[in-house]
Amino acid sequence: MLRPDGMSLKQRIGHVLMPRIYAGLVPDAGVFRDRLAFLVEELSIRLFVPYRAGVLDTSQMCNVIQDMATEPVLFAADVEFGPGQSFLGATSLPAARAIAETRAIENARLAGEITARECRAMGIHCVFGPVVDVNNNSANPIIGTRSYGETIEPVVAMANAYIDGVHAAGGLATAKHFPGHGDTRIDSHYALPTIHKSVEELHALELAPFVRAFAAGVDCVMTAHIAFPALDPSGLPATLSRPIVTGLLREELGFDGVVLTDALTMRGIVDRMPAPAAATEALIAGCDIALFPGDEAAACQAVERALEDGRLTEARLNEAVSRVLRLKEKARLLDETAVDLSTLPGQVRRNDAQIQAIAAASIRVQVRADILPISADERTVAVWMPPGTPMPDSIPALQELMGLGWRGRFCFAWEEAGDQWPEAVRAAVQDADTVLLFAAPDTQRHEAKDRFVVDLNRVIGELEGTGRTVVYVSLGDPYCVACANRLDAFGMEAVSQRAVAQTLMKPPI
Image (cartoon, rainbow, N blue to C red):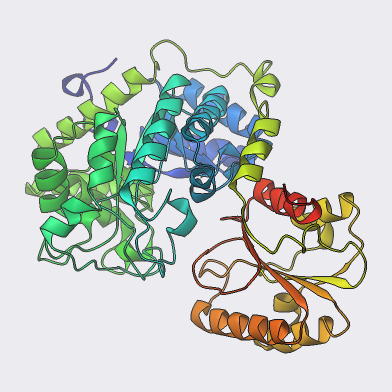
């Protein structure tokens, strides 16, 4: 393995920038090859995040890059919801909160193990998970069911089990989002949140799961684009704050693994400065890897200029590179880099039955015993509320219901009627005895969540007042809707949707 003192400046900079690269193009296509050659050969980038491609295409791309590079390349992936989140054909998992709802630590461990095993089979070494944020704000628009819970203990227990599973499969784990993203009302993808808590409050709640993850041997920490005035009065987001990254994370809490930023293309950063400039500022603050630095050539030039003017020291750059090299060593990149494509099919989707069982155990049922199973005839209407203009055969919940014998009717109120959806619902259920309302009220799927939630609660109250049986199926935020009969699936994932349908169609035990 190389050492920083034996590397050129270009090689060292290439070890602290981690761009995302689309793996869905045919690996030998000309444009694809030119892009890779520029990043790997011209800029000497040695860290990548593949995304949105099939398992085979991703593996082929990893092999192509490893062949191009003169040193082993480290690959990472954002796969909180299982490898299927980013790679078509791989395993998808229920949300973290759904797994926590099973109350079984071994399920979190299995989730980590499956994720790392399939990623390693594709040539990907580092998992951007688990989320160790405590979701202690029910209005949080971005963490929600990505967190294992609203209190410290379930988050710690599940996250550390997940880390253990990742390590058992030979992967690297990342705790995120330091120093904590659970108590925000703003999504840092779109703006910069600020958490106004005292240092004592932050240590008592937000920081506690990170400290426990360090003890569990987590390999990396991802920073949050959030301002914490009690930790840094300047108002800088944690990602760019030396008092937070170096002072708190490194010196006070003693974390000596790799610190990487959240995506620098998020509005919580780029509203303040362009991503290439932010990459340099993050390195100065104490981060080791700048994730998604925007224009990669511009980012390399920004790092060089910072070294020339003394804002970034050679010692700080070499420290970051040393940690990245140690991470590569831990990932066994000296021993193996190429993916064996012939064995790949047998390495993915080996645990579907176990995953579906976990999803089934995660469904929280608050329904009168006489309602289940629901009526299977046309007097039952399913109203699908999550936006997305879906076709019926693309919705796992509806497909599973019909496969189990349900012959009711369904409508897509949100997409067909927009803001006038309440009227569409009322019209669709006029002759219904039972109404199933599927919804996922969060800002990732509804632009005006507050209004949507108010309207949804009003419609549910009206329908319940008519004497109809109303069952609300929550596929997202479990906090904001009131209904006498409800099922909480804690996520939109296909396995959770199927589990909901199975629960609706079987008598209670």
